[in-house]
Length: 154
Image 1: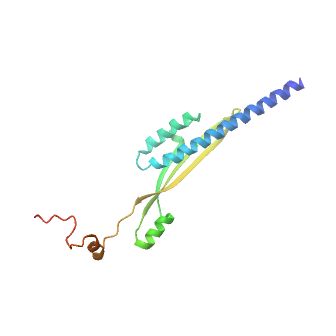
Image 2: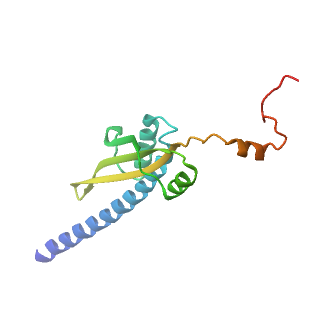
């Protein structure tokens, strides 16, 4: 009798360990998909991004509904190193947005629910206004002195 109980406990622990490994792998792969979807947030409607994430989650065996996904885009003053270098040299003002995707779902190991959260964030450049050309720069680009791209009607 004692041996049977030990065998059941060992099997339960082994089964729980296998489930844990599968859930870890699924979460890891799904996190990569969430990171990938960040690239499409501004060009696709949010509902499309949520639908794609729900489909990807199902492929990994994760039960997810669109209400469990939060997508936000907010203005930020944060700049990349390259933007800071260019802004200092050229005086360009960059407009950036921080895109964030938060996913919350419940994973089960041996029937015990565990809350899992995935947070992925990225800064995207929305606009970089171009500084007007100085007369010297225009002359360098068009040495003949005529205005480039202006139709004179002749």
